[in-house]
Image (cartoon, rainbow, N blue to C red):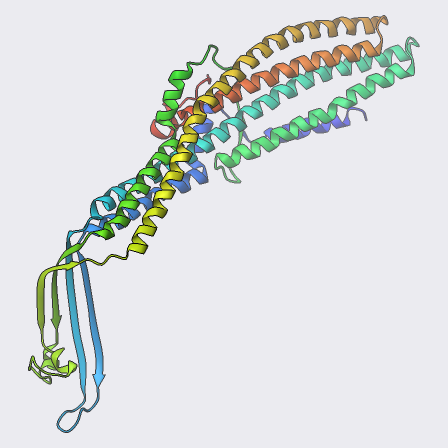
Length: 446
């Protein structure tokens, strides 16, 4: 029964791979961009922005208003029977001077710019999250391979201890130590398998795959390009391309235009108007044509045509000034946010460079330690088989080899994560938005 748990783990891993579809990193990210629901929602928001632009532009367009009054008036005295009332009115106005029209047109265009940059930003965040998830799955698989390699050595060691115990060359304690050591590795293997399955579920959600779609099976390596980063060039690239920074700049411009729109109330409004008031003939026949009639029912039943230029200049200084100051405060807050975000760019790049330098040294150290640890483990295994080394020596050698190999995997994963963040900081995920899929390849991938 000692191999039941191993058989169960192998069965779980086999079932998890049934129906899996091998996929490379660039193809995975392209599918995320095409099918992720959050990206699709912000893509649809561009249509809303186009409609909002029309709302802003409508300030300078002609305005047509029409209405009609329908009623019934009872008897108004001798000789005046009850009658119906129908009066129609149409009014067409075209602004000739409105200080807010230029700002409104610019504000409408900025609405589309803001929506597009928000779309780029959400796409960048989701692509970055998917890439991290992809790399984490690869790292967990490599760690699981290391654990399975050590497990093979532990199984062999337990078999040797069983043989030595039957031959009477070791005590029962050494055989129990070997068994406990082998069993102690199984929770780590189960945790690695569970982490991989959870990562596949998260990656599948990011890719927008439904219940009947195949399970993605990430393929690739954690290898990254070598060499130092040009922080000055990368900083300039990030400031020019980052969608979140572009969105903040567009929001600042939009807030300034909002302030100009509010301040336009300080200036007069001049409009050209044409208005027509009409009464159906059957109603006019029963009404008075006297333009000096005192009763409204008589004068309203006379057709009218009005045209001319109209001037309106009403200023509520409290409302206008208060709204202007409120919008100006919002603009200042956005400027502060933008300044902080821009100042974070060189700091983030310097942090990434330090991570890459540290992990490069770590990988070199772990490579040396791993080679030495594996050699020591083989030597101690031979000595244990010959009966010249204790189980404690084997445990120490196995622990050292395992730590070195897992440390190498962890350092390689940290390097890959750093390069993924480098693409986020510099805005390079926009290549999936702006170019075809065959040209979309993150830095550091093969």
